[in-house]
Amino acid sequence: MAEVSLTINGRSYTVACDDGQEAHLQHLAGHIDQRVGDLVESVGQLGEPRLLVMASLLIADELSDAYAHISELEDGRSTPTPEAAADPAPDPAAVEVLESCANRLEAIADRLEAS
Image (cartoon, rainbow, N blue to C red; front, top):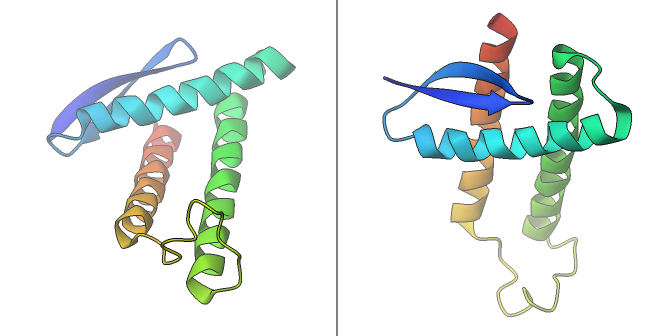
């Protein structure tokens, strides 16, 4: 099992991960760091735990919207965009990646809470 050091809002976190997942976790941490940075710009430094919770909620909201959109596409309830009209079925690989990301984010959040 590998360990990777992630920096969010200027603070380092060491997280265990499967071998080969280090770059992926760095990428996810970059996304979270960007969201936290956006929050700091709009509301200021509210303390690390509160900023992480707020960023997590924003990301979870985006993920929820993505899941809802995927469900609508799968059920045929949504009109696909012109770009997707040629292939109205969702890409199973994309659905799997989204689900995997959600599971990883939940695991990271659990680890951060335990820290």
